[in-house]
Image (tube, rainbow, N blue to C red; front, side, top):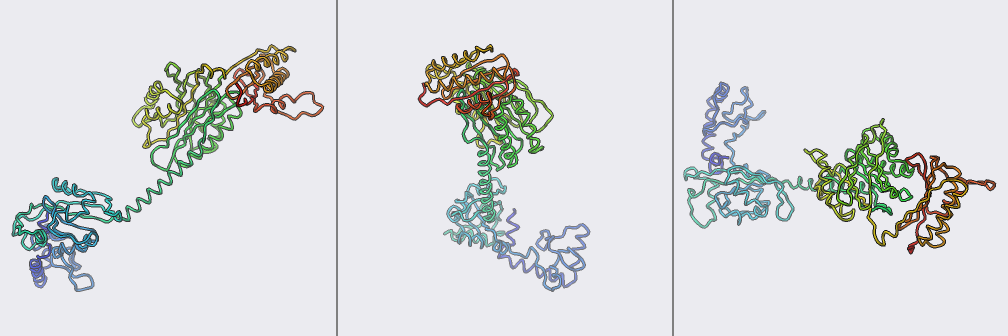
Length: 608
């Protein structure tokens, strides 16, 4: 901005403005008002009386529009419209609703403040340095900005600066200007008169540096308050969405006898639209545990709702004790029925402590990672089917060894996926982090999240589940025992099974009452298998720190069911007896085509 030109319009120039008005009136009286317009139309530049281009926005209303010569009469009146050159800059600035201040020199001495500024912050003495006369600029953090503008000669804008007291907010624009340096140019300038007033000296206008800054403060209090309300509303919505998401996840993980399990969930970003990541741990009985982790594509309440339905369905299907691929097959059909547009990935795994294996099936999910006791990390191989909801695919199950001292990690793609990187690189980074992670499952969860750079600003939801098969030694190992007996069939099978169970339970030093109940349950299960099953048959007894498990397997895949026996019936009471005396019972089909029937007894708190 060239302040030399603007200074011609400050108060004190009425004489020159009057001269221009008289000159324009004389031209209009002689009928020469149309000549400049004709010249303008011919391609010549129209200029005002002071030599500057005439304001193109001031147009007449006569037969020759846009003349820009003498002020034209307003339509329907005889009042002439004023020319822009006739307006006083001070009159304009004083009537602006925005706060305006003008400073000059290296100390940013006050040259002018408009009426709005005075109303907002009080009267200001001209000539004093800004840090003394305009302390509000320092509180707004604008004094360094004035230095930058004066040095660079480029305008700067500071948005949403809060005024002292926190009642008002302003967007401030600082624009460099030039002052006239000669006494002749400054003569009659109110700006320079203000600059000299109140300084206590008779400094000449030539002493001015010739540069200054025009400060324009636009009141954006309403906008700032609206933004604050919007942010508060978004924060409340996000808190509600995260609460909904977390309420759909298990509030407390089930802790199996043979595994240590921990999981964590981290919502992504700061938006209210959380994702559909979920996890769960489901005890199946007989020491077996189902572990599931999944991710519904998309974000928002709809994704969270689909996630909640799938998690509930998984728990229901898990109670059927089906192989992992059959559970995914059922989930695939359900996902298509819930919402065909929502696609989800999932891993369903079952841990069997008797076999030391993790049987799993994957629907488009990332591979399970297992770290052995020596630190070697293995990646679960295929099979991997398409995501849930696609339909038309037969999933298959696989297995991976999970021996004592091993740690397995199940996770969603938010942990390893990064923009601009291949997802395999993220999985490899997770393998490296897992190889060196030590501690409890909860500690390993935190270390993996930190190693992969997941924090509060992470842009994607992350779910991680860590499970460990502890390597037990010493007194802890004495609480876990296994014993098995192969049954060849025949009339001697039942007596052998009872004698075997009696000896094993006595050696484990169970109370007499519990030994008797265990022998009775083993006898009934073996009798049921002898009558309804086929060889090979096997009796297995397992003790953990919390329960006694009795299981009988045979080669027939027909699952028993509990039924009401009539008084005259000689059979049909075995399963009812087992269900009555045991804490829980169940049955499942085994991979070899047979079945397993089991029951559990909770151990007394003081059992050895």
